[in-house]
Image (tube, rainbow, N blue to C red):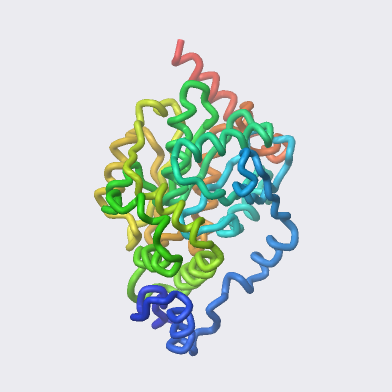
Length: 341
């Protein structure tokens, strides 16, 4: 297990199915390629949290898939946005942990949208359908970019109370695919998957990171050509975040010190855009720390959400917050109000 490499990038064949088959042969000595899929936590999640499908657009083919867990009385839950290769299941460890602490969590999977404004309009309709006025958003990679763009688009009538951005970015030009963004819809699925796999970690990684990559490759295989092409289009079409429009939104930035798809320049740009943001750094975690370093990511999310305890924007049931913590939070809010005056 210690010498195990990520087969997604170590193989030299182009077809994803062939890559996976050869990967299994090359690493037959590994315990299993489906460690996460076979784990008790994942199976408990799939058996206890129902997958809902919701249509909010006139086009019936645009279906939002989501897991909604935790107390439904909470009107300001945290909603989780996956990366290009992800589905709603990739955040199962966050759903289990956070709902166990009393939070309401919604993990979702986007329909096929080819334009950022179209996506933002669709997500706004989803919030209206779920009768949610404001929400907290956690986004990984593309998910973080979409979360920022939605907050920016709705800044005149705010729908986002806070952001947690994990391995995310603020400008699509960093991927150097802006000129090809409008051609992704023409490409076959295997070519799109090759583009995505090219951003996965190369070389030896620890077993938990290898399991996370295996799981994400498995999730990638479930996405069809249109789903992948539309996500890559959103990820790469020329666009950037206008931070002055979301300056009042509380932000936490989670990133890793080891290898990921983001350059150090992209990370520095995020710090400049949000100088007052809380920063949570993980020593390791690669592209998918919410899978392979879930305990740390869950803790950072909890710390981020804790600042809203005792307010109307709390994502947690009041019964799950002890009186001492509420007293401290109310005192903090009082001091903040006095400072504003």
